[in-house]
Length: 199
Image (cartoon, rainbow, N blue to C red; front, side, top):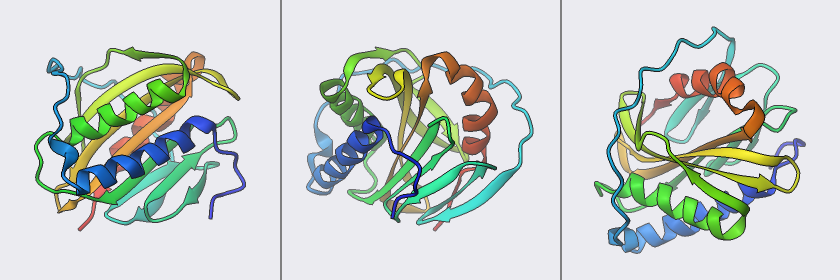
């Protein structure tokens, strides 16, 4: 069951979109063409402050989250949130394995759904790839207006588990635009650096 911490509308929307995308991938629709995106070399990340993380082990992965954050969800979707509603969500679903474009497909499908569902949606430029646990993830980002928080920034990541290719991952993290840089450096990046794939 979900935690007592409130869940913003955009996270629920993205969750439903991923369930649909995973279903479509399982049915073989992952071959749908997507607009080509330029490959950008990710910049060298700046050092992040050392924080104490609590370990969480999910289905096919483990991750650490900061003290004071709460967890809620199930084996397919887990959300890590703090009282300010900064949140990082991991969704895992069985789908069609070994598709080279699967990460791009998952990211673009999710962003397209958010564009339809959310107000003032605007895609923003970020490196098209990022590395987590030594594996490249496809990456996209957008800003939009959340009914509770106002202007927010969302980063969406997608890949498949290299230790279990039939397991697909979408991970997205978000907070208000005015606090994004600070929260990203102090909380989100340490969480991403702690992420490990499991068999």
